[in-house]
Figure 1 (cartoon, one colour):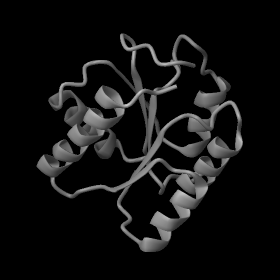
Figure 2 (cartoon, rainbow, N blue to C red):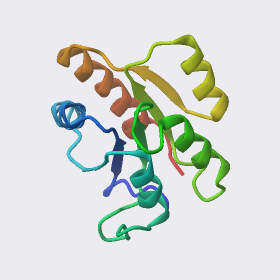
Figure 3 (cartoon, rainbow, N blue to C red):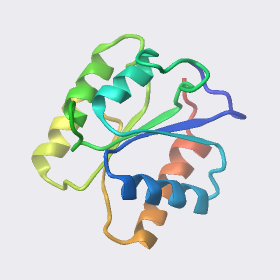
Amino acid sequence: MYRNATSMTILIADDDTDDRLFMEQALRQCGYMQRIQFVEDGEYLMDYLHRKGGFDETNAPWPNLLILDLNMPRKNGFQVLREIKDDPSLRRLPVVVMTTSSADDDVVKTYNLGVNSFVTKPFNFNRLVEIVGSLKTYWIDTVKLP
């Protein structure tokens, strides 16, 4: 579960098909050419992280960064974030919330739960590319991850 600079993985948890596609396109446009994995709800996310429900090391490489939507079916981002940060085997995973919400309550709640960053999804693709570029520069190119 440690960073290997030659095999980075970003895991994106988002139930919206278009948002997943736009995130992948934005990452690629910003020069991120390594692995991107997707899950469409919080239940699948937790199965992925715990290697259950058909997920294993071959189809679910350990993520170096999780980009998490708050509004997902079955188990929302708040519930998932709480589980991740309460689990000693998962709590070091960097989590960036990227959601349509800009509500102060959501920002405070996610930081209280241990999120590493909170970003409101833009409604413009060019702005998404800028934001994703900043995330890539910081989380992939700059910081040392466990």
